[in-house]
Length: 246
Length: 326
Ligand SMILES: Cc1cc2nc3c(=O)[nH]c(=O)nc-3n(C[C@H](O)[C@H](O)[C@H](O)COP(=O)(O)OP(=O)(O)OC[C@H]3O[C@@H](n4cnc5c(N)ncnc54)[C@H](O)[C@@H]3O)c2cc1C
Ligand SMILES: Nc1ncnc2c1ncn2[C@@H]1O[C@H](COP(=O)(O)O)[C@@H](O)[C@H]1O
Image 1 (cartoon, helix red, strand yellow):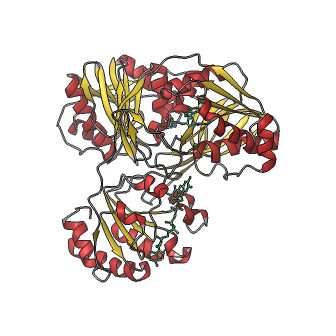
Image 2 (tube, rainbow over the protein chains, first blue to last red; image 1 turned 45 degrees about the vertical axis):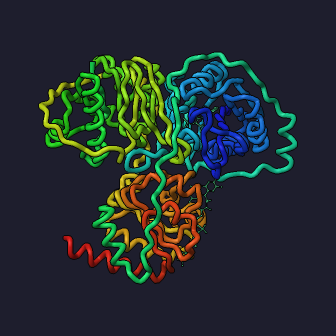
Image 3 (cartoon, rainbow over the protein chains, first blue to last red; image 1 turned 90 degrees about the vertical axis):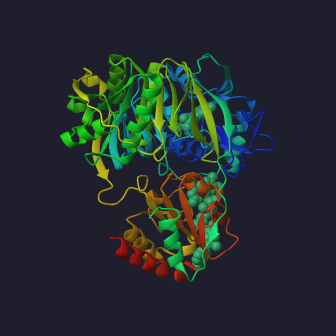
């Protein structure tokens, strides 16, 4: 089984968000970057589990500059066999998806896994776009993934519930919570990662369909109104008459 | 030219989110001097069709291909693209949710259309250039996106604008995208509908519990509050990790993102990863025995106190309130 896992680099979940250059750029000064949790905990770990069970290979792919290398090494330490970095800034979702599709097209992958969404741009877009470009079936927000021969069975989230579906290789799926349990890389993995191949290739696409013009912070809460613990009626009253939510 | 909307039914009815979508679509159409077309793939009753007219849809494309009743993102995308071409659409707008996440990226990639997922504002239109706001960094910031492609794809985040009616007479047209069997590659084995329970992402009110509640056995009072308020229940991540509650209730950075009108957080500290999933809520109430709990900074109303004392009393007060208003 040949699996491609798309990994992205995002600010750590506790990062204080700020902008520079007249609010047109994210301020990455002193920001700690991590692998997007959905990519690491769910997509990558599940891909490694399937490989360990059935044989095959797991390739991690990232569109980014050399500053992505630490998260790529982490993916190798967790269990990917090799990695590819397309050397370009991730300019927008279509750009990223197109690069991945161009890379994956003729390489015989059985599946491409992405995370459910990046925790910085919260798009939930790249996986569907890869599927659209390659004309492969797309299973979004999959919370489980099993395979048997060339058939995969997945649970996916749908409006108002969940659905178990079956699809033939090759396909694209985005991984959400439940697909696997997070793994911590061990010393052996970290050592092995140093010598696993990380190929850097030049970007081949150039199309961008969206731009971000500026950023702003949401309006701050005006401050909490505290209600004495022995007077819950007052809270009920405020929720009804002031906030008008009940 | 037209603005195309993908109108989806939930339990055979158009939800509030769909009515918001129609209001949004009508306003975009007005700004572009064009009309609104809705595409419906499912079986729809005449009274629901009337809903569409009531909120301002000019034309309805009613799908006649029953294969599209099954949720197959690639086939649905293909049908929607054919509708977009037939109607010469300038924009294709979805309501942001599970369906849009599956279908809209495919439509956008195939049409090479700029796509803004989870829009929270109407587009500011300057000729072919549209500027649209979207939440980024899990609600910690807002980005203004620009799209200049000839066709634009947008998904509208629920609860971003108020529904307005606009009585219209709508023309109903049968629609068939002439798909091949080969377009349907995903086989459905089993569907679990959330059933009678209020779905967490649609709920107007959510009551949520954290590790402060000490154990699964103490959720009775949380469920009671949810019952009184017709609310859904949620929880913090450690609570679902310890299996006190099911994983489906976990909200936050790595769980569900919700935007109810009212979020009541009980025994939850308000870690940044938790807030990421709930900070879009209109009103937040926090009940916590630690006055220093970070959640109070993100709250509108708070009670500093022991949940085991406060919640039963609050439930009585809610009950009394419900008895007098209904
Ligand atoms: C990458 C990453 C992703 C994460 N994703 C998520 C996520 O999606 N969702 C999420 O929730 N967390 C997430 N977390 C975990 C998060 O950091 C917190 O650890 C978690 O939210 C804490 O849960 P809690 O508030 O229930 O528990 P605690 O932090 O233990 O807080 C319990 C609270 O209950 C109060 N309390 C105790 N007793 C009482 C009482 N009798 N009455 C009233 N109050 C009481 C305490 O004062 C305290 O504030 C993530 C962490 C990481 C690192
Ligand atoms: N720069 C990138 N390089 C590789 N994969 C990416 C990149 N950006 C996003 N992805 C993948 O696409 C998924 C969804 O991203 P998004 O559409 O931005 O929310 C992520 O979880 C990753 O798996």
